[in-house]
Amino acid sequence: EVQLVQSGAEVKKPGESLEISCKGFGDTFKNQWIGWVRQMPGKGLEWMGIIYFRDYDTRYSPSFEGHVTISGDRSIATAYLQWKSLKASDTAIYYCARAPEGMGSTPRPFDVWGQGTMVTVSS
Amino acid sequence: DIQMTQSPPTLSASVGDRVTITCRASQGISNYVGWFQQKPGRAPKSLIYATSILQSGVPSKFSGSGYGTNFSLTISSLQPEDSATYYCQHYHSYPHSFGQGTKLEIK
Image (cartoon, rainbow over all chains, first blue to last red):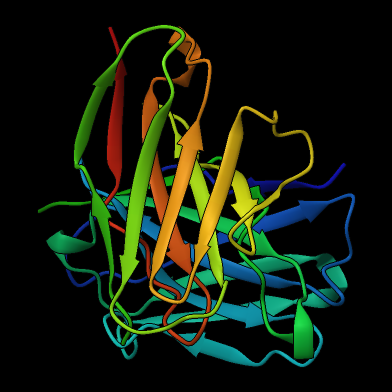
């Protein structure tokens, strides 16, 4: 059974950098997509972007492109979400999730989710 | 970008009832829709992909239908544990946006 285990909660100041991680157990990620989803306090789910572990092809939502970087390391089955300069509005829970490879190697909907990482950005 | 509009925002039903949540896409997306359940304080759980295919382990009380721009999730024989927020998501083109969610309360 595949499990995604995310790194722990973070408390940061505006302007600081941050990288959170998502490690897969029971799966090599080889032909999988791993995506990131934001959930601001009391709000709904927002699709941020996704990375394909076969060739590291990465796609972003326009709402997040340029503010975050999604990366991965197939050798350790780990995906990353990185900020260079955090804002207070980045305060949220961030989920990683696996999207199986579908037709034409495109991602299907997420089927396995991480437990979430709470990121708090406050001065 | 394709927008997904869910309705209703909130829904109240009784144990044993059947309810339907709808999701409308801003343009045709074939059958590229998934549905998710999220309980308070928990990570989302995947229910359905390709409009109507149940994810592994999901009970048959959940069913999905639709094509093009109109989709629905039906939950039958409601139980207290079905109380949650339900989200649709398209995966036709990037970004794979979610609907705003429907909060289901069991009376």
